Image (cartoon, rainbow, N blue to C red; front, side, top):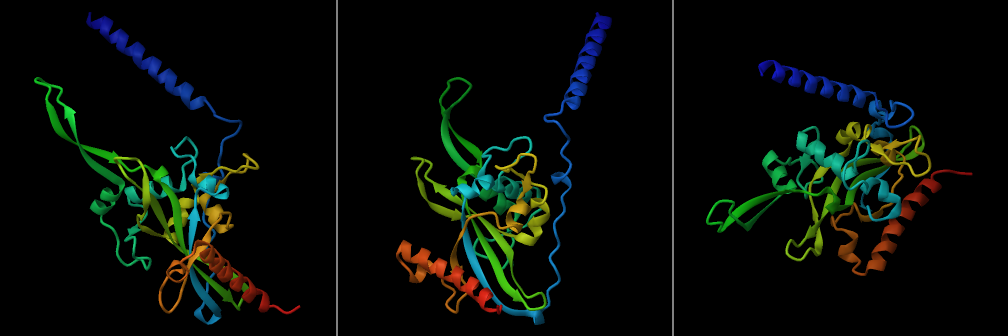
Length: 281
C-alpha cells in the first residue's frame, strides 16, 4: 500500500512538472516582448533658476471618460500585460514603492501612514448574516471590501510651465498627480460627488510608469507606456486653476460652467500667445 501511494505521488509530481514545462513553453504571441519591461525614463535636462525667464503653475483635470483618455482607464480589471493608471498607482502605493501625500497637500509635505492608506483603500461594512452553526441566528459580521480602481474616473495634474531662455523653448513639467474617486452611496449605488484620494509626486512615479504598458489603438506592435502618454502629452484635460494671489480655482469666480470652460481656454491661449510672441519672424 505504501509503495502504491509513493508511485501515485510520483506520477502526480511528474504530471505537474510536465504541465509547468508546457506552460512555460507557451508563447502568447509571435515574439517575446522586451522593450517596455526594460524601459527607462528620459531624464530631465538640467535647469538653472537664472535660465527661467517666465513661469506659471496650473492645475488640470483629466477626465477618463473622454475617448482620448480611455487607454488610461481600461482595463478595469488587470489582465496579463496591461493595467489601468489607477491600478498602477494604487498597487505601487500599497507596496510602498510610491509615496502618498495628503489629498489637500499638493506641496508634498504630509505623507499618509500605512493605516491611513489602508482606510482609503478598504471599505469596512457591517452586515447581519446567518450563522453557519445552530440555531442559525443572525449575527453582526464585519466585511472588508477592497477598493475598486474602476471608481477612479478623474485625475488632477499639477504642472509648471516655463520658458527656458538657454534653449529658447517653452516647456512643461508635471509635478504631481492625484486620483479622484466617485463617492458612491452604498445603499442606492448612486454617485454623490467625488473624493480626492491622495497626491503622488510625479517625478517619483516616472520609473513605475515607464514599465507600465498602455494599449495602442493604431498599432498593436508598438505598445506605449504610461510615461510615454504623459511625456508626449497624449491625453485630454482642461485647466481648473492657475496660480493667483487669492489661491482660488476658476469655479470660485466663474459660477457658470460655460464661463469656466471659456476661462480655462483663455488661460491656455495666453500661454500659447506668450510663446508665439517670444519669437520674431
